[in-house]
Image 1 (cartoon, rainbow, N blue to C red):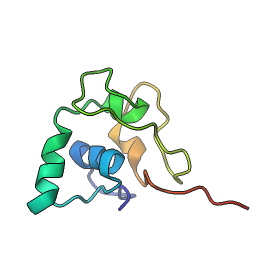
Image 2: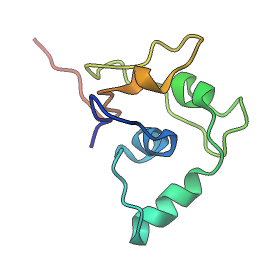
Image 3: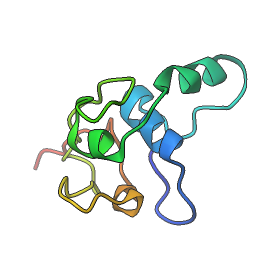
Image 4: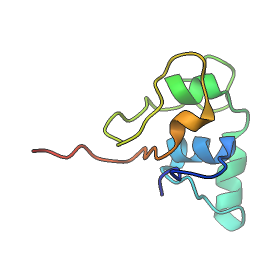
Length: 93
């Protein structure tokens, strides 16, 4: 499930989209342990990839095949993730 296109955003849910390809990882059962495993989150790391800014996990490179993606440059904003889909595939002509 991709990041919603509007409304309030959650840093932990954006991290779940990058790690689990699911912004809506549930907060109970297995989802709770998946969310807990995310640990410390740096918006710099989520936006740029890796864990150079002390995030617990190392984030994948941002998927530019998504119809919407962050611009990977400062200042980093959660709003840049509106509509982002980490597991979107590129459509071929």
